[in-house]
Amino acid sequence: MNPSQQHLPKLCPKRLFLFFTPFLLFSLYYILTTIKTITISSQDRHHPPQLHVPSISHYYSLPETSENRSSPPPLLLPPPPSSSSSLSSYFPLCPKNFTNYLPCHDPSTARQYSIERHYRRERHCPDIAQEKFRCLVPKPTGYKTPFPWPESRKYAWFRNVPFKRLAELKKTQNWVRLEGDRFVFPGGGTSFPGGVKDYVDVILSVLPLASGSIRTVLDIGCGVASFGAFLLNYKILTMSIAPRDIHEAQVQFALERGLPAMLGVLSTYKLPYPSRSFDMVHCSRCLVNWTSYDGLYLMEVDRVLRPEGYWALSGPPVASRVKFKNQKRDSKELQNQMEKLNDVFRRLCWEKIAESYPVVIWRKPSNHLQCRKRLKALKFPGLCSSSDPDAAWYKEMEPCITPLPDVNDTNKTVLKNWPERLNHVPRMKTGSIQGTTIAGFKADTNLWQRRVLYYDTKFKFLSNGKYRNVIDMNAGLGGFAAALIKYPMWVMNVVPFDLKPNTLGVVYDRGLIGTYMNWCEALSTYPRTYDLIHANGVFSLYLDKCDIVDILLEMQRILRPEGAVIIRDRFDVLVKVKAITNQMRWNGTMYPEDNSVFDHGTILIVDNSIK
Image (cartoon, rainbow, N blue to C red; front, top):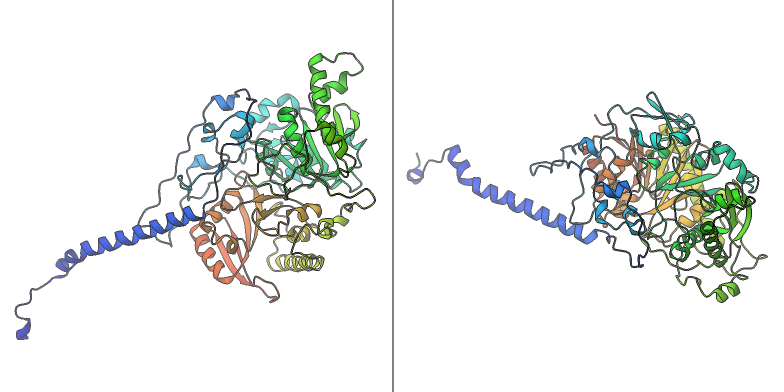
């Protein structure tokens, strides 16, 4: 033994472990605390503004419904993630009561909001004080692959949407029937006693549904979207909206059928669509009090309706007025309601063009040149002064008329009929989409034609008939949806609300549909909504706005089992995304793009088949 070592104590491995354990624990605690602090700081910095109590005065209280009186059971929360979890661990499955989880339309938290003006049914997303649930939304027990299109228009599996209430409440009206293990949609409705065909035939006798001049329709209070389903026979694309209410899962039934739909309500905020979007807006007993607030809701309809667009209304008071106008059975109350309604239409300068039971149809003017004198004489409402009528994300409705371009009938810009309008966009020519040229529009269209051909050739995604409901999370000018037009699909074109330039108006001018969105929040739809999700540059766009983990978990929530995701982005971003999708039990493969002219040279293909 070396003499210099004779007086050194002998430290066995056990003593060494005990000696260093306090230091190791302190270091681990410091690291975890630092990470948590950074995470919270990042969430606070990037979390979007929260909804506030509307500033417009509420002077009309809605009666309490059974939904308002009975509090829904609270969600059983998933267990918090273990502090010892590593990046390689899986996200847990949410509890079974998360099967139909609606983060921004959660009935378990709705009671804290006012019932006035249906504010309770607006979007109310979790705030920064309430951590988002980081778990995978499970599918219902016994879930089956949905019926393929076009069978899905008529049938849906009960296990996929296990709600009997609508079939029971609307049994005599033939909205939906439960037959064995499946739902059947016979095309009935409150205003469709003879079926939706007879109802649409009444409209067809007045409006040129088959001409291609009417392509985009907004159906307010859509039920199970039988109206929109039938309009597909005329190549008309309908955005069907309804709130989450006591008629369980109306919108979920519509989406299960393969029809465009989303949760929406006329309440406080503008509908999430640009101005001059729809060729026709329709309401069949949608239970909206159209004369309340000096006609504010009709002013919002006017905003999203195109010049010379049509407003079709059935149900009280118009249906009763038309039905009994020759029988002298109009009550004084009914006459008063109609007079209030007609007063709003006069102030909007709409012209009544048809009355045929049970529908009354009005038409919006082509411009406000002839209307200004009348508006000035009536004094209210005036023309809106907002410089951007297309801004509609969490923007309160305004009691004013959205002005039309100051052009006379000889100089007005006219949309082409469908399908010519798909590649002919008047809004581009008027210069309202700054920074985008006609040449750029054509180049974008050609680029997406090549990309979609590449998808179909390499991955066989599109021609196999597997996908019906498609969402494009960053739609741009709608080139992806335009390239899919030959396939039996529809596309929800999403434009981030703060993206410049705002291109959603171009999407609608092309005869396509979509919505504004902030992907730091949850989409206004049910789980298992879409067969195919397309995300082009989405994660690069949101890297500095919120945690991309939450965006991917939202994608998992809305994607159907056996669905697919196409993510295009920078290579370094996709590496991060791929690491997270591995934790989500997604089977993902990265592919370098063959064509170097594409701006994003790598594609990540994933699916959500949980092992």
